[in-house]
Image (tube, rainbow over all chains, first blue to last red; front, side, top):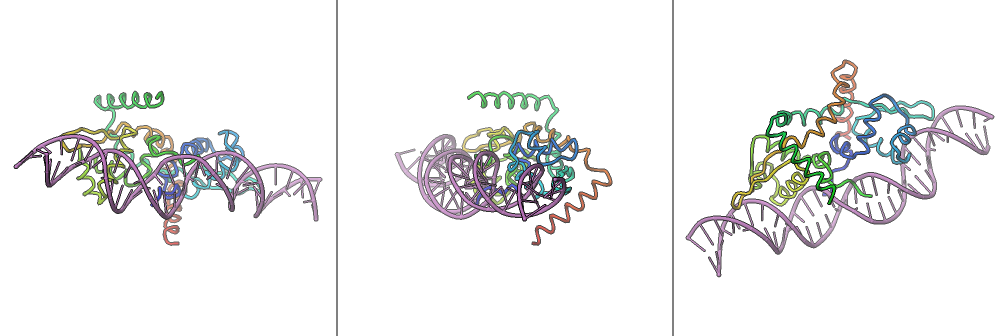
Length: 114
Length: 114
DNA sequence: ATATCATATTCCCATATCGGAATATGTCAA
DNA sequence: TTGACATATTCCGATATGGGAATATGATAT
């Protein structure tokens, strides 16, 4: 078997940073493929393809308007992620876990330098 | 370029369902590779490899004890996901978005059947 | 009908993936 | 030392990726 396809669920769709950036950009309202491409510095086909994945898992909706396509966020599709990660919320904000957190941060900085 | 490696960040590490299952299993405390393999019905090498990915992004820690290895959850490493998705929390729990939610659910059920 | 604009799709390549099978590493006990 | 046990690593195959380049589709205006 190969890696789980990106269109399998929201977790996979959102794993790619560019797609998270797209969702962030859509947080302020509807946008067009061209607008998004310009704002994020990506090519038009790249944006189209990413939006296709996001649409496949239902996290964006489209509205056709002449030759434009207005994409908008569909927040509730992100709920599964929110609910899954929320179950671990209690494991931070304690003093000991803040230490773990700090160590993790240092570790990831090390990784960047090497 | 190929798909973003699973060890790039927590988002990618957690995209795989088996790895989320592992983290869920570790929610109740430390566990051994063998225990996890049995509880999740996965082979030992598969579990070892998944834990390797989770360890690479800092979401689990290991404690060596003789020939055993006790893995434990490191919750705070999940914070980036929590904080990212939290920004979209306001987009549900409104009546209109509950409708979107329902539609998305129907859509995904359609997908399963076809 | 034709040209132009906005978007989607196809083809390509280099790169990772996940799982299974086999094997290596490391630890303990007799 | 040898054997048994727990875990990690390597090698393999089938599959999917993301981006670039080129092209197709589709809508509007002239």
